[in-house]
Image (cartoon, rainbow, N blue to C red):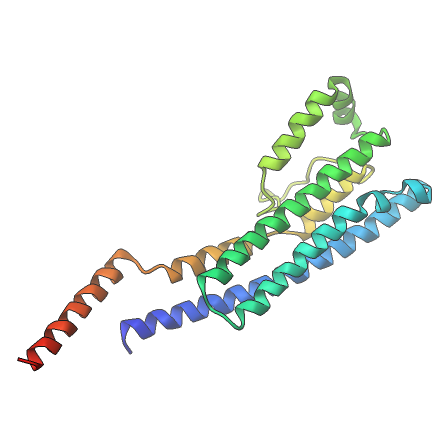
Length: 220
């Protein structure tokens, strides 16, 4: 088997893995959002929220955006089953980033709901309220700069927040049920497989030169 055939086999394997991880991540994200919707409904029931002021209705628009992002991951996987090019890999990364942003937005929207309804996170919430809007703005910026590529707690500990607030509920649900780490890893692996190393490119150039020299000698 030639080097070219070997490389093609490696690329094909990475694409198959990426297609699988895209579908898996899309399914996991959709399941996470369904669970979050259930938790929001339970939160509204516990707090006797009226229909016009429920966490569920407040979060509805951003929940839809996140759901659409998850569907886009599956769409990219479908396209990838037909075409194996860098374009599909780039689309996978773009949709992964869009999904991360959509899920992060859920946290910010949840925090705004708590703020509008004067909820707090115990002592931390009291400090936030005392410091005012500037502190909240700084926190929003930190959330935007952060990443949801790995929502799991590597130390096995709990997360900040409380399910007595919508923000805490959203944070915990995403922390326990959502991660883009596997997808990010596989996108990187596929990109690497598609990019020949300098050594491989040098060998291919030498091979091309030899072929040309062989062809020229036959015509002499």
